[in-house]
Length: 330
Image 1: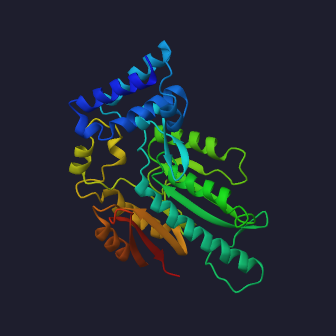
Image 2: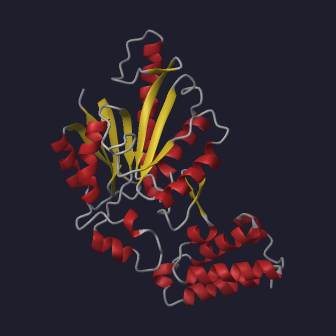
Image 3: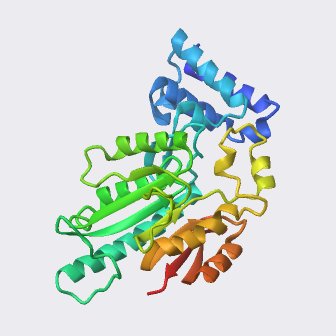
């Protein structure tokens, strides 16, 4: 069977599936992604050479992949990877599939890091710049302490570090980025460590230290939250209301419910995380948390109650509330 014939047949199967409306609104794209994974090629080459014949083993592997897609299993889980912020991440059903909306969290964190690194360098060169609490030396280098809470696949913290390496290497040359990332799921952390090895092995930038822990309760035997430690904390925690989270998974997508479900109002984790972040941040430190459209207003109220100032919610490209920022007063 040729690529063209296999492609046409698979698209028809997905479009006629009883789950097609939920599973595959873009059947052609799904089929092409599966074919590219089986043939180890890109979509342009696939479509340009669709008269080629699939080998029996290739056709068998492709049919198995299409069958999995018909059940609702996401393409990313079938092929084992997903692009996020321009980087390729391994994924499995142990982690949420990285979503493009979350890239805003990375962009905002990068802006904060670059701002602080510039101030640190200015200060080290005798300038008047001030960045509270970030001048502890490590081998003669000032440090920035960054935490990623509910790291999942590690896509947020690793995208931050890889972007700094690729696009801002000179900026970070004389700064140590000390990063920690936590998740309550050991399976998720195995995926995150794998991604760290793929993206940062051999890198001049230090890999994050990963901890299996409940939110910020890592780094101490008792699981207590370290005070005044971090310059920047980022998090994409479970924030979807329970009923909505269950509905989102009815199409068979198989993403981990625990990584979506934020309790009845979506705030169970955020209620605990906000005061922990305030405690763990240094004065002047920044907390960036994805909350989505479900509870951005309530998150701002929780931040105000905990003592954060300059609280702002940023919208994603779709115009929906996505990331809320708060600063710990100096």
